[in-house]
Length: 324
Image (spheres, rainbow, N blue to C red):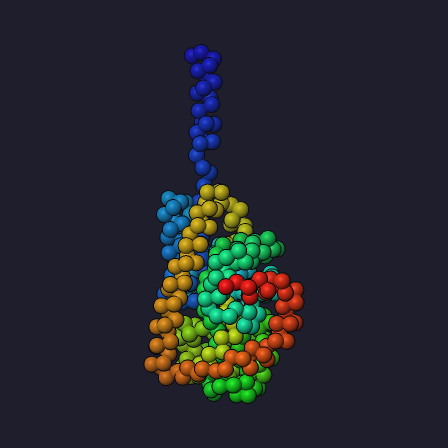
């Protein structure tokens, strides 16, 4: 065998290695506090299937819905450690750690649901995802889920600020949300989603605030029959992946994950609108009264909250308001 041929044969394994992509093999554990069938769960399951297919099974996925891996806060901690790979997380949970997301957490920062969607689909939405990625949170922001419009649901009807006075209302554990309810005259009480139902039943709280699908799916309507359409918060929710996991993926795998997370953003939106409409119909059937309120007094009452928390993001908030 001549020297040249020997060299060629010796080089073949190296050439072969260079021509194939080094794919990481792993199972992506996706955790959700919402139950199976919920729009965010379905959209993420479909995302997982597409990722599995596009990577020829190198990346598999397992969905853990219904809070089986713990509360949202506990899941976020597991994602930070890389024990859980992906989740959809409420901005209320992220706010204390990635301050810039608090611009989206301001009461009445979005004019309406459509305005919020335009913001998250545009450059501001991407900027906030990048802020999550570039923070010390050990997560990569991939896309947005629609968390709907949050309203008040209570045992006794709330038609105005006076009715709300002194009521104990459950909120997510973020000082901004507690202050928002306090500014409206209520008493904001932080607790995990899983604790709300018994707290409503036993009178620990007089109400909570959330969207119709959550009120229905978590059975809160059994204890609170009044739904006041305050629309005080319209919260998008990011899908995040553990940075520890992200760094193990090849650039091709990262692109695939990003692509299908963005597709999930648009798919979940359709599911969300359908689910909201059917949830409202079902809640009405179950005897829940939907109460239209004049939002202006609620908006005015929360002005000090926007001033207090919005100051560091004044420029960003102006840009949000300017989105048409």
